[in-house]
Image (cartoon, rainbow, N blue to C red; front, side):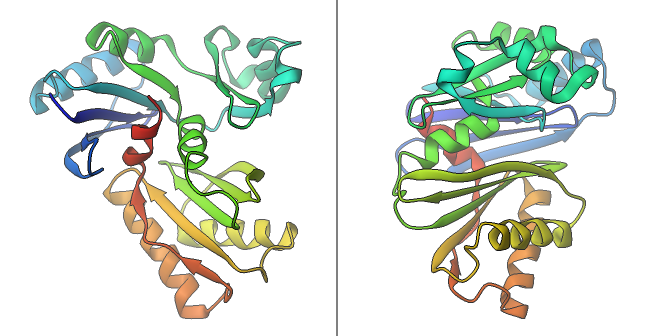
Length: 254
């Protein structure tokens, strides 16, 4: 389909799919599903029903997939070149990940590499369905997109997934901070945001804060955090930008 990109966010708990106009970044269609059964065969069966029902089978200009898991790490490219993805995951997460499912994405803009785990059922289903699809870890996609824009002034970016979020701080064309945090509600997100800014001694500097969401649930949570920030004037020198759909970030990753 001319000028449209099919963007997919998927985790072990849900899938979110959006058609986005590449020219205007307008989301013209979006659908979501929570997974009810969680094994390889069940995931594929549920995904087949979902895509059959919503008819995301047109000939899109680009296909991109962001895999969402907190089991990922950023590391300098020089260090990565002397090791293996499976060894990195084993060191960081032990037996909580299947190192046979390790993968990585290079971030040339940052001279870094994102190392993560991604199950075979994700790759096999989507590569068969959309042979030209580009898949990466969602955080790698977000960072690559952000560093194609203005990066000199202080900016704090929060990208919300189902059960975790990423906080990234950009300043003077460098990634000053990047980490993932689990959360259950808006108060958890607010706590982590304030703690990070305090620890990095950036709370009193002038800057911007922006939230990216994946679906209606994470959009509402982002709105709650913004309300808390505004109501209590907790970060007076930071302006809060309008929250946006993280599907748009995938446009800059092809």
